[in-house]
Structures are given as C-alpha cells and as structure tokens.
Image 1: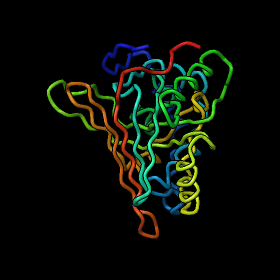
Image 2: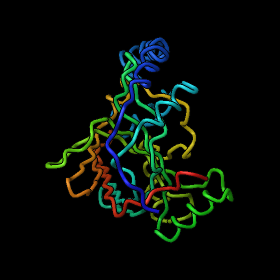
Image 3: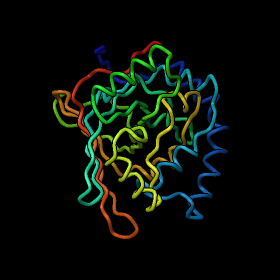
Length: 257
C-alpha cells in the first residue's frame, strides 16, 4: 500500500496541550537527563541509542494526541547496508506510515519523532512479517527497526533537506547467519542494535536532551523524494561501524490493523 505525503503540521490545539500538559513532566525528566549527562551516563552515537529508548517517559493521552499531528516525509521501505569493518550484511526495513512517539524539549516544544518499523533479511520475508503483524497472527513479530529523527520542518522542494537522526534495528535471530554473527560481535563491543517493538513506545515521549547527545546519523531527503540515512561510528577499540539505508519505495506498514 502506498500512502501520500503531506508536510509536517502542528495545530494550535496541540501547541496548547504541549504548553499546558507537558512542560512540568518534561522539565522533571530533563533535570534527570541533565544530571545523567553531567555524570557521563549517556553514551554517544550508536552506543547511546539504547539510553535514548530508556529515557522515554509515559505521557498518556498527551503523547497520543501529539503523535496524531506528526507526519514524516521519511516513511517507506528501505534497503539497509551495515558493515563492521569488512563484515557486511544487508536487510530491509519497512516503517510505519506515521511516527508514534514525539521527541520533546523541556519547554514542551516538539523537536522530532520516532518512526518505528519491521526488519527482515529479504523482501519476501518482510512481506510475510508485515502480513502476520497486520492480521494479528503475531502481535510482536521478531525483527524490529526504529528511526529517531530531529526536525519538524517540511522538506525543501528545491534543495536537499537534512535531518539529524539515530537508528536501531536488526533482523530476527536465526533469520540470517551473517547477521547473527555480526550481532554477536557488536554485543562484544557493547553495541546492542535490538529495537523496541512497533507499538512499544506509543504513549511516551523522549527528551530532546538525550536525543541530541546520540544523534550522529543524517537523513537526506532530495526534492525528487529520494531518502537515505547514513552514519559512521568508531568503536572504543577503533573498529568502524557503517549504517546506510536507502528508501526503495513509499510503501509503509498499514495504518490500521
């Protein structure tokens, strides 16, 4: 199913909800995050994305209302290239049609969002996984992915638009021997790429302060609709992890299940 895109929009009502309902909650969260940053507990780059997930806080209906107002020009199906030095794996990611979780500044201002999805070693496997998830045969299918994106501005129709971002994702265990081997190596390096399930962060918000410390990837969107995510990360022992995802279609996970 292919879905049309509209620019990101923020209604006056949502701004009111943010200013009245989120500031106190996010301010408290931001204070805790600030202390963690000062203590050096928030890791940088890929290593810190799990800290980003752990920083999410329940906002209940407020987060749901905010998320319904968020649209992303980056939704779709991606082909992923992931290399740890010379060890390279390939897989596919299909995102949700809309973001599920806002990223919020301590003032309550929306600075970005989470775009969840499913991951698989091949397109055929991905289609089966999506079907099982859509029909309820699997509430939480194996193989998850998640983009964390900063920027609520609509893309420039005449030039490239860049969005700072972070990524988590891996195919299901046992689906690809090379992927399992690389995942084991990453765990030795204290890099866990397992992402939460598609619905796990719904109703939550993520503090911008944590996001800004780990967002070392870049989403590039061109005027003709091409979207790519790229990140290079150097591990503590000097190895290089490269993440590169390019959108191959606008097909997303179904909006309704």
